[in-house]
Image 1 (tube, helix red, strand yellow):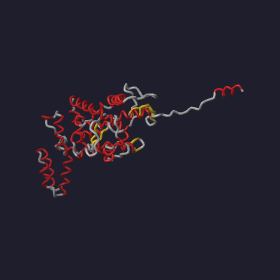
Image 2 (cartoon, helix red, strand yellow; image 1 turned 90 degrees about the horizontal axis):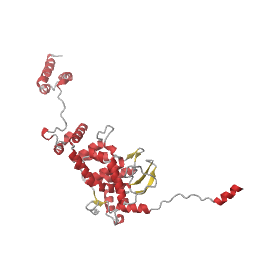
Image 3 (cartoon, helix red, strand yellow; image 1 turned 45 degrees about the vertical axis):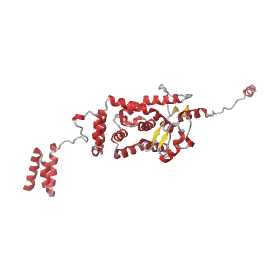
Image 4 (cartoon, one colour; image 1 turned 90 degrees about the vertical axis):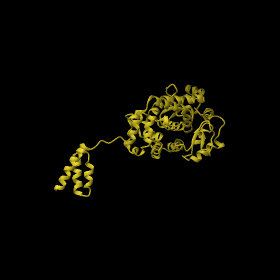
Length: 355
């Protein structure tokens, strides 16, 4: 090694002690041999590498402030575009979630609950009498329910006879199987009733297990949802939308029904269509009323928002009564044919026995 290179190596080592290593290496950047020597010394001097700073560094004065952390994150979106940035954001959000925040989430879920039930009914349909589900190998009734409100399994012969009974059955499912996970993994304090209703529709269909992994850590769905609902930036929206649409598969592969359902839910999730239980359907205002339109109106839209708006604003699909009540009454009035058993002539049978 030449005297010049030896001198450089010494200077690099010495400069690491006083924090001027970058200035020394830059002055010799035009020499290939010097670069190789520099890299060799840096590899040996690993203790001089400074630790990486957090993706989002929260000032001590607001380190425990939930809302301030979200506002700070909005100003540093570039730092959150990596996997480590997303993980750190989610970890901090969960750490800052206090009991008061959880109470707000529960309250918001309760306010969105009725809208959620009607939206689920539009996708799931209603079957009052218990039927055998060959896929799940379980007795099912109402809006895809396999459990009674008391938690016991649905049995053959069970029947829903009123709108109130139907809603209470779904509410029991939400309380027993959904609310805890939704409160823990979704920022429902930052979500509108419509957004909570659509996320509830997805999780009612897929199960809330999609929000966490085997170690109960937040899944990608929970992370991307939290990023979008808290930060509202274009990148978070695109990533979350792609993940949301991916839940269109069964064990046998992509499912057309699920694919169409996700595409119909997306415009509602991102407020391209507004759903309501009180405001009348209006194609120009892009509002659909779930209560005043028959449940079958959603079928066959295949994610076409204009077709959906047109149907909900059409007289053909409008009803004067409540949509859920209408579906229940229609199902109860439907005739279910029972298999006809062949009659046996007992007198003929007895005569044959004597002969």
